[in-house]
Image 1 (tube, rainbow, N blue to C red):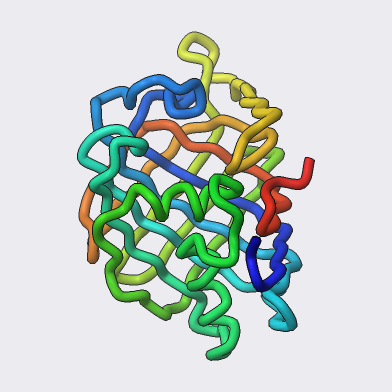
Image 2: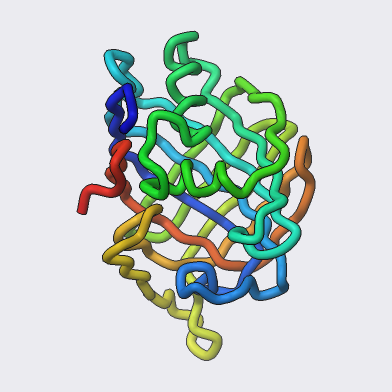
Length: 211
């Protein structure tokens, strides 16, 4: 069992290289056989032990040569420069899958699939998200720039709404599905254009999602 109790309520935007809907959520192989993704989160309220995490942001940039579960991935983490030393340490432990029951959260699951962790970066993070509207903007100067928006009906151009409901998910319970564009320029480099994105409200603890 984890020695330190932690919890966070947060909002999440993720843009990956797969087709709309993301095969990973259905235990299928990635659209193009490999996975690249940028994730941004903003904590509304949270703590790691006695360390408060309210209002902080963080970004994860990921790349795997195949499906995530096949391993061999690399990751870079950007932590809000406003975080104190204690908050930085707490977030790095959570994001590294520490103080978490095995398989309980996306952080712990991803940590078991990564071969390379780049040194953490502490920088200003610009992040705006509206989960219900399926819109988001995420920017870290010199590292990543991305946006998400609703899927559009190809005939009428109207915004299309679709959701993924995961009763036993380790990342989210319900997510709004959209499309996204992201350019990652370092330390992991790739570019995504009109690919899957999702927007979610999260309530995570060291034991998993609170539904």
